Length: 292
Image (tube, rainbow, N blue to C red):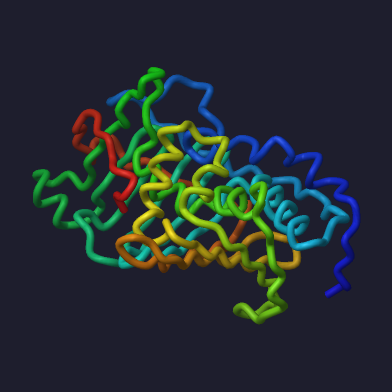
């Protein structure tokens, strides 16, 4: 790797000075279309190939993490494999231009699969759900309308915890000092390891792209194990894309131990809503920030 030099930031600061663009209440921009209502068709996110930005000249730890934030904003999507405490799952995540998540849970849960597309969620996809619903495999529900009239994003707490742009916003916030740990081997490649120290309150406060209620939810999700201290470890590939993230910490009621792997950033991914004939509409529902 080239020797790191602290040079004036040219690209990243100019693009990111205003914070992570396009990450509204869903970790992506607020959809321009009206929120989906029960019975309406659910949109499928686009998988158009992104145009990758050039690396900025500031290769200080902070500058590199700003570059990574820009790279992941540009990617818009990736496959994720996460472990949040005792809960784990994997599948494609879209954070722009609309929020979408399609995961298969690998730890016991009420439903084996979870699909979120914009403001609508589907749970099920397993034999137990089909037996309970008389042969249909999916329960469908829409997020409840907020005070501003916009519907909530179901499972927003989960999405914010695994969204790479949210993590990188916390890592590049004002007053946060990034540390370069060194080069390491990850799978078949060499990656660069960076570390920042923060806490649940500052992690959530850095998300200026989120509505206040959404930031409060993120803080609530992190606080049990991260209110006192939170360490964020980030591993980047040679394109400054985030490939691995770990959160550890201590709080008033436990310890934080989260891990997320990212692959195929910007790849040809999709999150598909189930066939309407295979779903049961359960109306609207609000999900806790702690829901997984």
